[in-house]
Image (cartoon, rainbow over the protein chains, first blue to last red):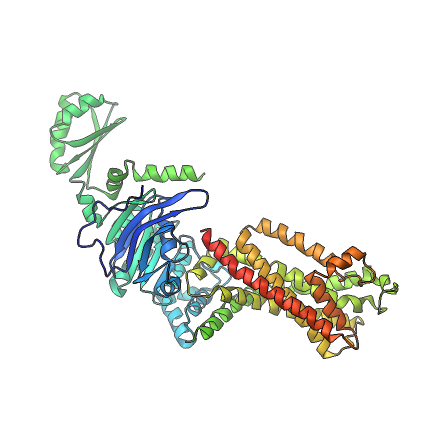
Length: 339
Length: 261
């Protein structure tokens, strides 16, 4: 059953007519019967960063392949920059820049040569081509390496060159498919800086896919959580987190407790109490204020508390709430399936 | 900018990319220049005495062999063209091209331009060495040009066919098996090493449909003082049609590739 409704979409943004990316009920089944998409729907407003968040295999890359004209959907529509991707792929290609999941540098060519060829494919030539290539090399800190074969670049440098190539023809919409996967923390932080600059300073519309919660939280103005080929929820990171109403309270006990007795002890102060081994997870409107009472109640009921933490809701919690499993568990499942 | 200018720019950009990558591998360049020379000298020695058989119109086997080696080199060199397509597919470079406005024809044509420049240089070296070893092109410069055109057309057919195979098979091992399977029988089911009067009749019959043989026949005519131009041009015509068919196949192979992703 295709699930196209996005439960948390706010009415103002639904079916926005001036959206730079408008996706409706996209479905795609691969040869061999793998259902990659089962009805994906979302909108991206101009000049914003939109995040598609989900574990590997959720359908993020398939969505990007369709939106960038590489692949065709079985059903549904996708409009980018006002142009239908299935009907007019050539016109869409001029509007978009793409950075694929896997680095796509030509390893036998230098950084400059990679950019120059990329520009030529879009019709740039002469001094304008050279100037644009040099400008991007400067901006991404690659100018000193401009004449080196990209085989000698680090992973982070290759990734920067990928993004620079995506920007070469000054696209209106930029697709970034897992731009920081495989990067070391420093290179990831650099890339995050670049991505936020793109939408803030240049008004670019960016569609970002990621399986890092932190990345989506940090970069995306709005985001959709994708699971098993369907958008399970959509909104700003703040909206999604505030829906959870309250902080996460996690208490670690010295011994595995009797779940029923434990729940009875804290029933008055905590909601959504779940026990897993020696760990108790629950919610409270104000976790910090509730904690002393919780500890007292546990002590008097005879439980030995080893540690207690209070955390603001994270996207991991949002993911757990909408899909019934933690993000890490979903990612591990996918890895298992891939083997 | 007209779409023709744009396609020309895309094609030359992609062509330059391949030529540059080639020149950056001096060992590869050296081997690809020396290899046809070794074929010419080795086969020339190995089969030296067969030129005394009655079917030969010349006493110099090297003379007989030179056009054949030019053709064989055009086939062998370009048959591997698809390997770099597979490399581009693996590296994600092909997908980067396919989401840009580049025409599929320009991707193939740019790649082909590089292959044909290589084939031309190799052919000139073989012809030069053949002449140094005693081969004479009695039809003059025009006949040498004829041989080159035949070799380039056959090379273009093999290169584009190989590109199509690369897009369809997408595995280096499968590609190596397919190309090896093709080139050796195609060389030997022709009059590349032996004149048609000396080969088994069924081979002669099969050779009539073998594109390698068409190119060899054109090359052989170029040795004559009075080439049968009509015959040579009919074979060139076949080669043109074949090259166009292979080009069409390569462009179509992109569609099959995109359907699979």
